[in-house]
Length: 321
Image 1: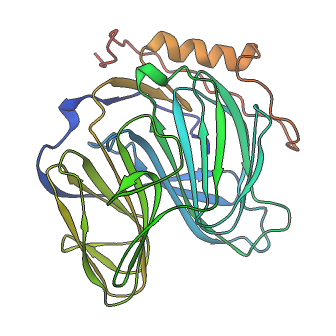
Image 2: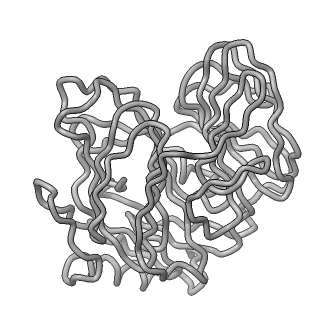
């Protein structure tokens, strides 16, 4: 999914200085962003005061939207570099196309994982004949320096491992949880899991104390470590936890996001993750005037133009003056 914000700000993310080294309960409210004509998303990361969770650098939650008489998601071809996109649905379908030639319909509880590496472009759209409701999340994972120039590629996994407990089914989307490991390629120690809780469930989920964590509320009424989380909100949990108390007042859906704190500082603007202002500006110019990001074939419409990069003064390590 693209960041369609035409006034996209340069974000400086990562580094241990942003990490809370102990358990906390920091409730994050979303920023509402229009994505195309009929889809509004709730943006949880980057957030004021909280830029990343492990390598997770961008989180949008959308729906459930009634798109029976609407085109649904329509995101024209746009570029990415230095990151992975994770497409995750609870309802509906999304048709993915990219410049490596991938063409894949992603359905609920299936992993669509695109690794941009050095450069890729893609589009996302609701199929012309689509389900009535669209509900899901789009997330980005920052690639570490050693892997951020890998060849671009796309993975689709319909069968993912599960961790179960009474009243809980956890689908491991990326990384590992309680001994179960996703088949999706991960480049940092990370976890992403979809948690389905039955009404009345009280349970505890094992965690890695070296990871920092957050929980995104997708649906229903749930308490995370005794904090009520409403759909479209995110609770940042910090580090140092060995388990997470969960309680559901109704059937509820959550996403657990975590990983080792991302030590490198990154510069994120529009749909690019880099390390310097110069890298970001070159990527923008290359998208507008070269074939570096390839071509998305089969999309019925024009590709996105990049906005202008705002004037900035960034030091080599990415800190804003």
